[in-house]
Length: 301
Image (cartoon, rainbow, N blue to C red; front, side, top):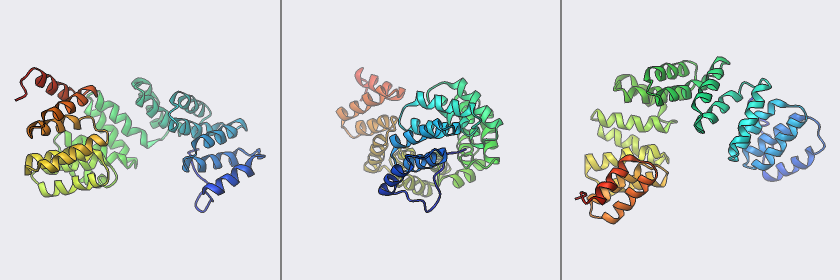
């Protein structure tokens, strides 16, 4: 059973939740504890949600291990979350397979992730196709990735359109990619950034800029670097490019340090540029590391 709340109209304000916590104390019905746990989780009261889910499990509702796992994951206690998901799966809660697979993936256990996600697909979970495709893509198997993305799309997973569109655009199949990216862009930041890049590559600069500016305006860091590159390369707008690169860095895009460093170097702010290269290199960006080495070796200009 998937995580859920008590439905529309259920009282969920802070005072109402406090009253429900007091009222539920004597209940031996695990559904009461689970429903309250879901509403507490929705309200960001994760510690109390955890306690409610544990109470439901103790009362025999082993499927609530899934909701407990989600809460432990959100609390950053991933090892405990993994255990809860595994217990949920053992209890027949197939919905936990997807989240267990994603947890394995996020922690670098690629083979375990693949095995669990394949089991999720076999159990009828359409959303497992896209992460399986991502694993294939990371392994350099674009054909396998495309098969999974198409399967997810055909099964009704809304993430399938964006994933497939991004892959097709990367492979130069722009005619097939564009309608998928347009369909996915309003809800998929990766697809919006890929659409902007495709439009620029095919000479539609004004629309590309409009698409990327919409992404940046929506707080999507994926659009920041492509917008900065477009403004700098196509329009010579250094101030606009710098602002876009700084937004990328502020949003956690470590590759932004390299682009920002190049612009700062170009505009004579070499100490600031060196610092950006250092930050990018420390984050693992090989291009930033190469730029820093060039600077240190005295070949920077």
